[in-house]
Amino acid sequence: MSSSAASILIIDDVEQIRRLLGELLTDHECVFAASAEDAWSVLQTRVFDLVLSDINMPGMSGLDLVPQILERSPDTVVVMISGEPGIESAIEALRAGAFDYISKPIDILHVQAAVDRALGHHRLLADKRRYENHLEELVRERTAEIEHLAYYDRLTDLPNRNLFVDRCTQALGIAQRDQHQVGVVLVSLDRFKKIAESLSHEAGDVVLSEVANRLRSSIREGDTAAHLEGDEFVLLLTQVDDTDELTDVCLMVNEAMKQPINLGNQDVYMTVSIGIATFPTNGDDTSVILRNAGAALYRAKKQGGNNYQFYAADMNAQAVKRLALESSLRRAVENQEFITYYQPVVNLTSGDVLGSEALVRWEHPEFGILPPAKFIDLAEDTGLIVDIGDFVLRAACRQTREWQDDGLGRLRIAVNISARHFQQVGFVDRIMEVLLETRLDPACLDLELTETSIMDNAQKATAVLSDIRRLGVRVSIDDFGTGYSSLSYLKSLPIDNLKLDQSFVKGATTDPDDATLVMTIVTLSHNLRLNVVAEGVETDEQLAFLRLLRCDEGQGYLFGRPVPAATFRSTLAADPRRKLHVLANPRRSERPGIKVVKRKIRE
Image (cartoon, rainbow, N blue to C red; front, top):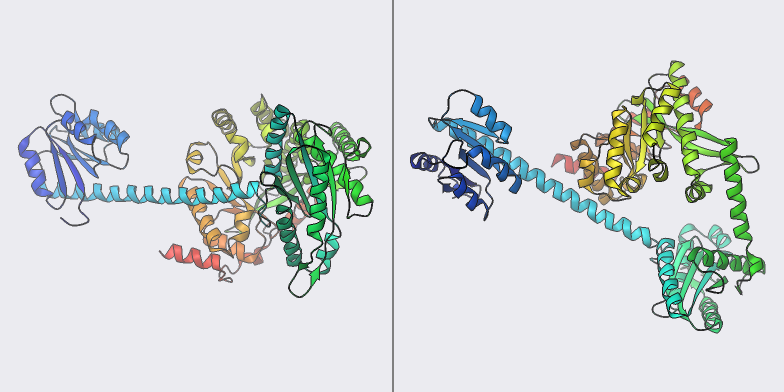
């Protein structure tokens, strides 16, 4: 028996037919059963590539067996056999889940052809299953990397802010139970920006990495050194008996910094400013203690750096500033001080501008145009994000309808929806209200949601998404790959588009692993009949790479930055097919990512 032999279960209550089929299929491993009940017993212990089953048998019929076979082994192919005239039996067999149908009396050529077709189909199913498993593994590995990056700093491999907050919160709970203190020590490098600017970005990274190592060696096992951002680090000291212990740690840090940091061709000397706050004296939760340590750090900086300061109540300027910003944000919502910018979304094959994504800006009366990074987190914390989201949705739909009325074509508009906005009661009614008010065709609206906002309550989210799509509105998963990244949930969600996160696009033309991952995600999406939009397209090489994969759409600085509505309109009116020069020669680059994709396609 050859290595390509298949396993076949033959079920028929007539022994002569079983024997005949076995003689016809001697190249394969055949197992025989005289009834559906006997066959089911056999199927409990093994899986077959192909099942040939009579329809009409004493006891359980072959048709009753088909769903049970497929439920137990989805890749098994079933071919039914019947001696009844007409096509009714064939139709019934196919409806039950059979792949093919053979009529009695047995025709040798017909049987052989049907078996060949069925086994070919089985191989396709098996290949598809292996491919899906491979994709699952790739995405799982990437997800593990992303999860590590979610909690650890890439440069120093220290815990980042997220993990620090988690550990600090746990430490405070234990300290409250056991009645001891916890110290939070903020450490900031003095003159780091000037040093980095005068040397190089790489030199700055060396300094940060070395400082991280020295901070690790300055604390006890069980304490935490974390990298918050830029030149700012934090130490979490648990089970502190008195402030002298905190002073000793500060002195150890200062001592560690006295040694020069070697940059290859020169040494640099660093000093640090340190701010200290404690639990329970200076606060009873992580955010308060961290904020107060920041106030102490600010005082240390103000005193010239290279010193440490314990928090005192008069240092709370940062809290006052945040309260002022929150007050300004509430006023901005009331006065509608927000404007929408628009970034083009382009068909990567033709270069046509299909529409745009609406992006909010705060037109602050004192500080000018503020990007979302300056206020979105605060808006989320205060719940004002819902009002801001409503404003952007209405403004974007109204503006898009105006452009359509001006003869600029059937443009689409994509609007980001926050998790809090999406989870509001009556959210679908709000969408319908805006569409009626602005007279925008629902098919021209695309709502973008993150994986996390959907998976917080997947069952409820699926129901809401279904209602949205019944309106005719399109739904996109934004920043795909940065959240749950599970292939199984993609298959079950009522969505239209998948937006490939810009972090994948950025590395795709330089890193073969990223290139392979992008290829698999695009292929998977197309297999699931999802449209793929690549975010963050900035170079000709990235564009050529994405076109090679037949990625559907893209947006990024290569096609246009976010601009006010008037600028977007005038640019589009002057040239409805922007940046066509970048589409002219997709073979310009032979960077590693494109080579990988070409090799994969050839395979």
